[in-house]
Image (cartoon, rainbow, N blue to C red; front, side, top):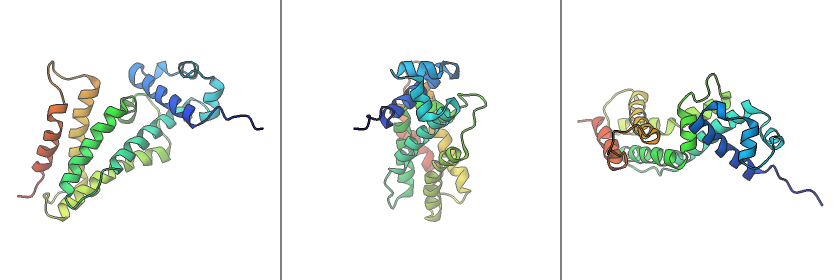
Length: 197
């Protein structure tokens, strides 16, 4: 009878989750393979077996973060109203960040100085911007948005969403203010600002 596989996808997932938590809350110096293994109640051998070393682990954390993020954005249903689709994508952006805060900082900051993800992972990350560009393109083509470079409109919208979510997750809000009550309204107001008159 073969021995059971102990270094499985469930362990891989737990290691990635904890690595994301360590990076986003304590910084790159906190992420040692020994500490990671101890925190997840496994061995450094398991970490090496699953990832091959720290650079591959870091790339896998980045890859997992963008995989989850991309899946959530891609799950937003497309309708005949691209402007509403853009708003719904913005809502999905925040939901993804709140669901996986341990990955958000990894995705959108240089949490590990001088770390460069693999070309494949960088390409997958860039792909997460494309659904928004396509929806903006549809809105421009239908005459719902002004005639302007699609990537610039999409970037402005992405930046507004990213700013609000980053303020929320990093706790950088003025006392007594919250993002939740204004988030969707801000999305809709921003989208309305691009409407053709």
